[in-house]
Picture 1 (cartoon, rainbow, N blue to C red):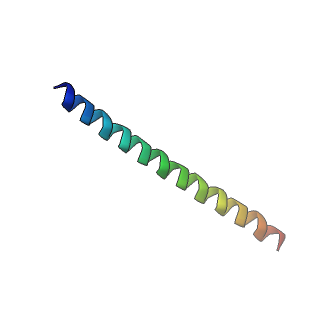
Picture 2: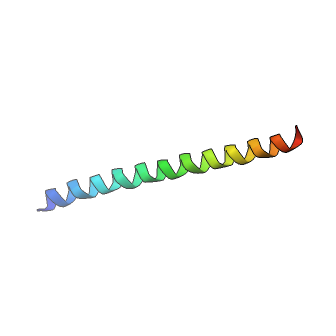
Picture 3: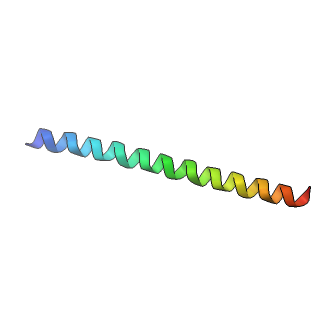
Length: 43
């Protein structure tokens, strides 16, 4: 049972890390779009 708990915990960590990565990529993308919009205003 403890081994199964460890596996579940590792899976949860992997899922939460990939979720963080997705959130960061989404954040990066939105800031890139905002920057492009700002640059577009000056052109």
